[in-house]
Image 1 (cartoon, one colour):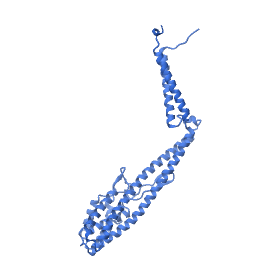
Image 2: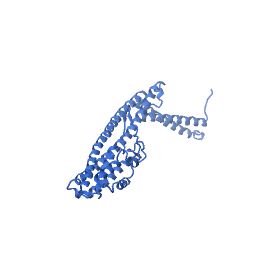
Image 3: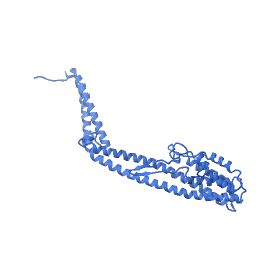
Length: 334
């Protein structure tokens, strides 16, 4: 009778290979238990991976829509916040302007001068605020602040209106400055004349943000604030007809700008509503696709947990056997 045996080196190699194999199997089962998906999806669909590939592509597409919707939501929220700030600044100045234009407004001259300049600065600063390194009122030039510094704009205007002989001249000078062919668009607006491309936030749903700092509503707001400031800067005698005329023009233009901004904010608000609806649709579609994928290549968690436990026991038994074999020797046997 012949006996076959293996040497110590071969035994060690076999034990190491078994340990390595069991460790790999444990890692695979652990991943399946964590993700709920089989490690070899092709085997779950008998090698026909077309359907799985389609689901994976759809999940990738929905994830891209979700990220785009998130970015669009940040942009729209920032624009809504800024336009609200512009309106609040105008409203604060408008009350002083209306009082200044009345016979009882002499006490509001300095207040109107200071508050209108502060509001002008605040509006420009708000439009020049970046969110995530992007300027949302610069059109396609998102890396460039849309406007020059407010102080520079007011300084240039001051040179133009300083010697205005009457209210009509001052009003015309300021309105021309902010007009379609004026210096504001030529020199002070630094953004692009092209709006950003609409973003697709869900299948077939697009959101655009065409509002820029060169919009008529912004120009009317700045023009109205500039009139209020320079009317109260000493060019005309307080309470004079020219003084009241410029303030009246300022009030009229600020009210016009307010109506224009309300319309613009409603457009932004509609975009926010579309983004919210698209986000909900994306989440629903993602859930459905995840479930479809799980139905095709999902791993049975109970079965996987049982196999994982069995593999752990096998590994422990192998370690114990290896340890016992390492303690065997002829001396101990004898």
